Length: 361
Ligand code: TRP
Image (cartoon, rainbow, N blue to C red):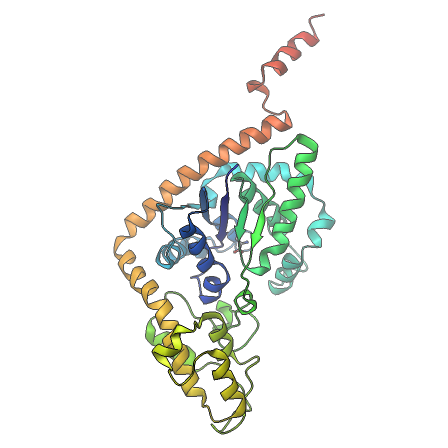
């Protein structure tokens, strides 16, 4: 059995730097490591519809945005299969069978879904599809026999549920499915990059996101308006680094070599933080540094995006071909699942024979 990656994102908006440090950057590294036999990257449109049933156009319009973000961040269609979830009907079929292996009470306990229900104001009327999306996510993962799922930390409960369903399936029907392992960022800051306003999470509705597709000018403006330490008023004031968004972003993006290039008075981030704590270091200086650091990472992504935007038919072809390719793998797994469940009646000669014999005695 090989090492296989499956992961994906809901196409409800462009991807931002939180997605990037939380998972996308890691996927590109894993892709380039050459350690994986197969890599599947899924645009989870069917899952996006579970809480956007009334806004199909929003999901549809964002397919291409997410695809452009993937490709410009460095996912390479020669090394990974990028596909659209809804184009793989086998995933829905698997979900229907997995649904029997999980209880409503267990679904209620999923902390991410619990949170999302509150955030979306669904307490009174949860769409059944939304409530059960962790089961559909199990189909996404197991259809490709994924061993490794690089995701943001908020997805850990989905992985736990997937593992439980896999164990249950295998214990009833025999060893067919593979238990996946999540890969989350090891850097604490990357697990939960806050919005530019210092709020817990980046979200489009709060307007606190830096998008991968933002222009250099937009990024600069967002950094200059970033939340810092409200008590650090004069340059000479001692400042706080914890909860200071500029430092949080530096924790996520800054590498030691950035200092020699952009801020040679310091050797590393610790020295910069110490100076800020002592006082005598102004916010504008650290913000300018962050702009340079971000630009180094985002400029190549931006440049690739503007090239790709000139070749949309090629990008769509990548998705079309990827979906055909992904479907083959999912269909193969579905066949194995149905055989294990003994509902592959007409492929099963012994079943056909036994049904005849039953009345032929
Ligand atoms: N739930 C993920 C998100 O909100 C998207 C997703 C759907 C996914 N299916 C998946 C992620 C399977 C990893 C594996 O972004």
